[in-house]
Amino acid sequence: MIFDPLFLLFMIPGLIIAGMASMYTHSTFEKYKRFCASSRITGAQAAQRLLSAAGIFDVRIERVGGFLTDHYDPTAKVLRLSPDVFDGFTLSAIGVACHEAGHAIQHATNYGPLGLRSGLVPLTNFASIGSYIVITLGFLVMSREMILLGAILFGVTVLFSIVTLPVEWDASARAKKLMVSCGIVTAKEQEGAAEVLNAAFLTYVASAVSSLLMLLYYLLRAGVFSNDRD
Image (cartoon, rainbow, N blue to C red; front, side, top):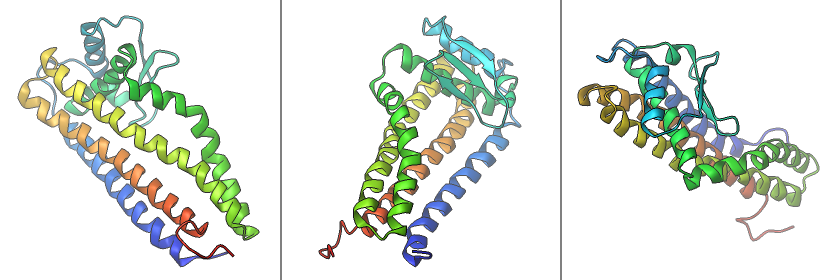
């Protein structure tokens, strides 16, 4: 199958949603880069304050290159912050840094969904590559069985994106609460930092929706929703 109009019907909405979410996140981050917190502490210092307040002293905070490449690595217990976040005094920097610190707190308190997501990483890495190979071969040889097998593998990546949602939401919820109680931002400043986190969360929602749309397309092409099994 060289061209399938139905593929575009499922793919284009996902691309539009993901693109809009990404642009909104970027614009919101840039907007609040213009506002500095009255505490005048950097993102790295804000993250460290949250970790210390939670009694966590075995997590390193490192600088990592790129834009919004911030993440927490639970296997190494390292919180990596992009330059704008690590060194920034802005509400954007503090919001992102506190969010990542929220993941470290999740890890320290054995937050269930985070453990599930971490456990799914190896399988997801395999499935994300294997699914496309199997699905492509299925289309080339016109085998519904192979397409279905690929769709099942792709379903693992969809599950991962869905499990990610409560993990990211909870990390942001922790950050929004703790950044005020720890004296990092005022209640008024928290509103701006929270807007950054809400925008970032939309990118995960968009990713989950896009993945789900593609899974539905593969299942449709595998004949799951059809009585025709020939």
